[in-house]
Length: 286
Image (cartoon, rainbow, N blue to C red; front, top):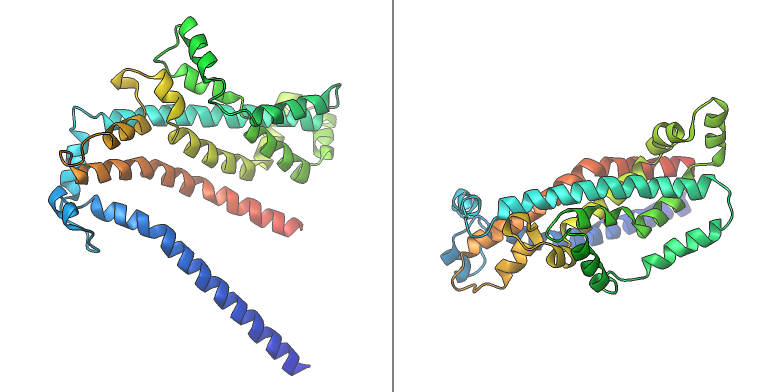
């Protein structure tokens, strides 16, 4: 028996070692492009043209200063615009998607299944199909070159709704809602102070996905925004990509791309703890 247990332990240890080795290799492969990006962001244009270097350069502050003081490409203004649009979009879409999912989950009404399936059907329609009609409607409403068409329509997020609905079915029993009603809590209070705190992991996941998707969104802002003061960061990066690299400062270009990554990393670091808490909670319940 001891020999069998020892052999099982050895086999389990070997599997863990192999898994760790594979994960380390994959992690290194994923981090290499980021490392190259940040290294080139510290180098001068002439040094970058000579080839890649493992050692960081001495032009970090110079590249940052060139990016911040560039009067032709408004990177800082683009970051502020992207941050405003992404933050408001995430807050509104996550909150109202959770509210819609709560209504479908907690209430029994006619056409409930139809409403659920209809929302899922909308999820299958690509944005490019309705782009022409959307632009015409924004022109009629005099909302062209405005942040409103990029924020308000994003409240209707079918994918976010579906994720919230599935999370509620697996983690929030209806007995909790009934208990809150018995205690005299109204529906809005129940949703805001009982349901929402229990959905922190789901909210964090969708906040990360929604922020990244909105931050990197190029298609809709390119159709709506025209003035330089209102362009988002992906529009400026696309403008830089279309420029002549032989005449453009590559160190400044890499620094701009690094600037575009920092907010996404910060958002993930802030919200990742809620994801870990949710996974731990689910493991304990299981």
